[in-house]
Image (cartoon, one colour):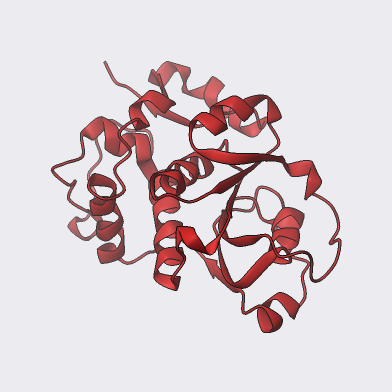
Length: 237
């Protein structure tokens, strides 16, 4: 919705039956819209990493772009499942919020947003979810440990990727691309059912901003200016 089909901000929309996933019974309408498309993307990233075999005991994981819609849900999901998370952000004034949501460490993105330091750097992360791309992802790829995995779903930091083959052939790194829109319907259904059961975030409604449709333009401006924090949900009277 909103990509190639009108209705992304509509209260009602008519779509083909094959586009639809039934809402799980243990998930309210307001909770489902607190997750939204960004939450689905975060869930698809997490699913891919767990299928790869990533476990909390494997070591520290990261989330980049962590104050954005995908990032903040990714942080909460990782924390829910017991992972030690490094939150990477350009909004260091939000450190308290991110630690309250489960981040063990908060890292300034400027520490990573530079030309590739080295094709193979100190191994730190067992995996992570990257919603930024560009130079930040390039450096994170080189800072992974043996058999690590990264799920990539964003490009706000740039379209290009400067890396080498070393992390892939010397550490066995796996880099997964996530496309939420064209994911299989049964995969989306699996993620939504997880949101209602083992991945259920009891405090998700506490970490979302409700607005009216009239307030939407100013919120979009915040996104374009890089000033938006977390999720925004439109509430119709």
